[in-house]
Length: 147
Image (cartoon, rainbow, N blue to C red; front, side, top):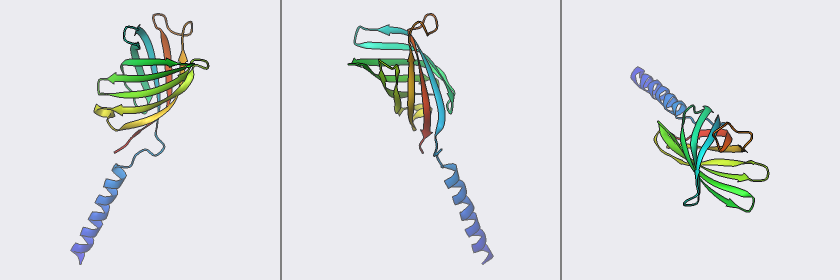
Protein backbone atom coordinates (compact mmCIF):
# COMPACT_ATOMS: atom_id res chain seq x y z
CA UNK A 1 0.00 0.00 0.00
CA UNK A 2 2.83 2.41 0.88
CA UNK A 3 4.57 1.66 -2.43
CA UNK A 4 1.38 2.39 -4.39
CA UNK A 5 0.87 5.68 -2.51
CA UNK A 6 4.48 6.72 -3.17
CA UNK A 7 4.14 5.80 -6.85
CA UNK A 8 0.89 7.77 -7.15
CA UNK A 9 2.44 10.85 -5.49
CA UNK A 10 5.49 10.55 -7.74
CA UNK A 11 3.30 10.40 -10.87
CA UNK A 12 1.29 13.43 -9.74
CA UNK A 13 4.51 15.39 -9.13
CA UNK A 14 5.95 14.42 -12.54
CA UNK A 15 2.68 15.38 -14.26
CA UNK A 16 2.70 18.77 -12.54
CA UNK A 17 6.29 19.44 -13.64
CA UNK A 18 5.60 18.38 -17.24
CA UNK A 19 2.43 20.45 -17.62
CA UNK A 20 3.79 23.58 -15.94
CA UNK A 21 7.03 23.36 -17.97
CA UNK A 22 5.16 23.35 -21.29
CA UNK A 23 2.80 26.16 -20.38
CA UNK A 24 2.93 28.89 -23.01
CA UNK A 25 2.82 32.56 -22.15
CA UNK A 26 -0.92 33.13 -22.55
CA UNK A 27 -0.57 36.91 -22.66
CA UNK A 28 2.47 36.88 -24.92
CA UNK A 29 5.80 38.55 -24.44
CA UNK A 30 6.08 42.25 -25.36
CA UNK A 31 8.49 43.01 -28.18
CA UNK A 32 9.80 46.05 -30.02
CA UNK A 33 11.66 45.67 -33.30
CA UNK A 34 13.50 48.69 -34.74
CA UNK A 35 14.58 48.34 -38.38
CA UNK A 36 16.88 50.83 -40.05
CA UNK A 37 16.86 50.60 -43.85
CA UNK A 38 20.26 51.49 -45.29
CA UNK A 39 19.97 50.37 -48.94
CA UNK A 40 17.40 49.59 -51.60
CA UNK A 41 17.35 47.78 -54.94
CA UNK A 42 14.80 48.37 -57.70
CA UNK A 43 16.21 45.91 -60.25
CA UNK A 44 13.71 43.07 -59.58
CA UNK A 45 10.92 44.94 -57.79
CA UNK A 46 11.67 46.99 -54.69
CA UNK A 47 13.81 45.52 -51.88
CA UNK A 48 15.18 47.25 -48.80
CA UNK A 49 18.01 45.94 -46.62
CA UNK A 50 19.46 47.07 -43.33
CA UNK A 51 19.86 46.24 -39.66
CA UNK A 52 17.44 45.54 -36.82
CA UNK A 53 17.45 45.25 -33.04
CA UNK A 54 14.78 43.81 -30.77
CA UNK A 55 13.97 44.42 -27.14
CA UNK A 56 11.49 42.96 -24.69
CA UNK A 57 10.58 39.27 -24.98
CA UNK A 58 13.31 38.67 -27.56
CA UNK A 59 16.63 40.48 -27.41
CA UNK A 60 18.74 40.10 -30.52
CA UNK A 61 20.01 41.98 -33.55
CA UNK A 62 20.96 41.27 -37.13
CA UNK A 63 20.12 42.16 -40.70
CA UNK A 64 16.92 42.12 -42.72
CA UNK A 65 15.74 41.85 -46.32
CA UNK A 66 12.32 43.37 -47.04
CA UNK A 67 10.45 42.95 -50.34
CA UNK A 68 7.97 45.80 -50.84
CA UNK A 69 4.90 46.03 -53.08
CA UNK A 70 3.08 49.36 -53.35
CA UNK A 71 -0.65 49.23 -54.20
CA UNK A 72 -2.88 52.35 -54.14
CA UNK A 73 -1.87 54.05 -50.86
CA UNK A 74 -0.54 50.94 -49.08
CA UNK A 75 2.77 49.10 -48.73
CA UNK A 76 2.68 45.29 -48.52
CA UNK A 77 5.99 43.90 -47.24
CA UNK A 78 7.50 40.50 -46.65
CA UNK A 79 10.36 40.96 -44.25
CA UNK A 80 13.02 38.36 -43.34
CA UNK A 81 14.93 39.16 -40.13
CA UNK A 82 18.23 37.28 -39.84
CA UNK A 83 19.82 36.85 -36.40
CA UNK A 84 22.66 34.55 -35.28
CA UNK A 85 20.24 32.16 -33.54
CA UNK A 86 17.70 31.90 -36.39
CA UNK A 87 15.43 33.83 -38.73
CA UNK A 88 11.81 34.87 -38.73
CA UNK A 89 9.66 36.32 -41.48
CA UNK A 90 6.97 38.95 -40.99
CA UNK A 91 4.15 40.14 -43.19
CA UNK A 92 3.49 43.88 -42.94
CA UNK A 93 0.77 46.16 -44.29
CA UNK A 94 1.27 49.92 -43.99
CA UNK A 95 -0.58 53.06 -45.02
CA UNK A 96 1.43 55.57 -47.06
CA UNK A 97 -0.96 58.26 -45.79
CA UNK A 98 -0.73 57.68 -42.02
CA UNK A 99 2.67 55.92 -41.97
CA UNK A 100 1.17 53.31 -39.63
CA UNK A 101 0.29 49.68 -40.08
CA UNK A 102 0.26 46.16 -38.73
CA UNK A 103 2.58 43.14 -38.79
CA UNK A 104 2.42 39.43 -38.08
CA UNK A 105 4.95 36.61 -37.97
CA UNK A 106 4.59 34.16 -40.87
CA UNK A 107 7.36 31.65 -40.15
CA UNK A 108 10.69 31.08 -38.46
CA UNK A 109 13.62 28.71 -38.12
CA UNK A 110 16.29 27.96 -35.55
CA UNK A 111 15.34 29.41 -32.17
CA UNK A 112 12.32 31.11 -33.80
CA UNK A 113 10.79 27.98 -35.38
CA UNK A 114 7.71 28.11 -33.13
CA UNK A 115 7.43 31.89 -32.87
CA UNK A 116 4.07 33.58 -33.52
CA UNK A 117 2.81 37.08 -32.87
CA UNK A 118 2.24 40.51 -34.30
CA UNK A 119 1.24 44.08 -33.58
CA UNK A 120 1.39 47.60 -34.94
CA UNK A 121 4.10 49.59 -36.69
CA UNK A 122 5.19 53.14 -37.41
CA UNK A 123 7.28 54.24 -40.42
CA UNK A 124 9.60 57.27 -40.37
CA UNK A 125 11.31 58.71 -43.44
CA UNK A 126 13.68 61.67 -43.89
CA UNK A 127 14.14 64.11 -42.25
CA UNK A 128 13.17 62.07 -39.14
CA UNK A 129 15.71 59.26 -39.66
CA UNK A 130 19.40 58.86 -38.78
CA UNK A 131 21.97 60.04 -41.38
CA UNK A 132 22.79 57.36 -43.96
CA UNK A 133 19.45 55.59 -43.63
CA UNK A 134 16.45 55.43 -45.93
CA UNK A 135 13.84 54.92 -43.25
CA UNK A 136 13.14 53.55 -39.80
CA UNK A 137 10.30 51.20 -38.92
CA UNK A 138 9.31 50.51 -35.33
CA UNK A 139 7.24 47.37 -34.80
CA UNK A 140 5.54 46.90 -31.42
CA UNK A 141 3.47 43.98 -30.26
CA UNK A 142 3.55 40.58 -28.60
CA UNK A 143 5.13 37.25 -29.46
CA UNK A 144 4.35 33.69 -28.39
CA UNK A 145 6.48 30.53 -28.45
CA UNK A 146 4.14 27.61 -29.10
CA UNK A 147 5.26 24.15 -27.99
